[in-house]
Length: 101
Image (cartoon, rainbow, N blue to C red; front, top):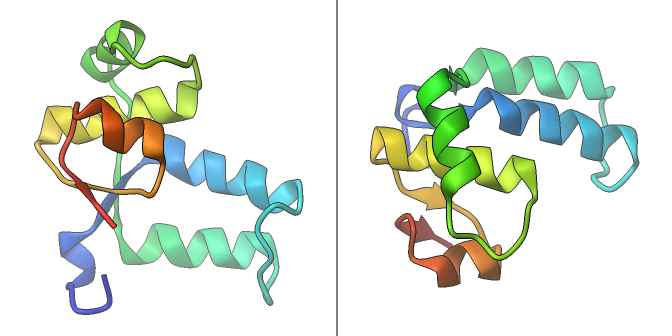
């Protein structure tokens, strides 16, 4: 990721919300206030909005769990034909989207 231009990196806006939840619950530790970190992320990369097609695709994915964050993230990557940076074994093993890690 460090070698990419910021314009080449995109995340689902749902991912930004998931990060906010993880920061709020203390599951991710950062040295700056959570709002600052989230603002920096949002200003440096492309946020892909949730739309009707992604929402519908997310409900129909053959994933073995119902995590709405994972489902929306995978559906977003599929819609835009983008590789997904993840180490989530369930997503990697599903082969629903190209993964990097």
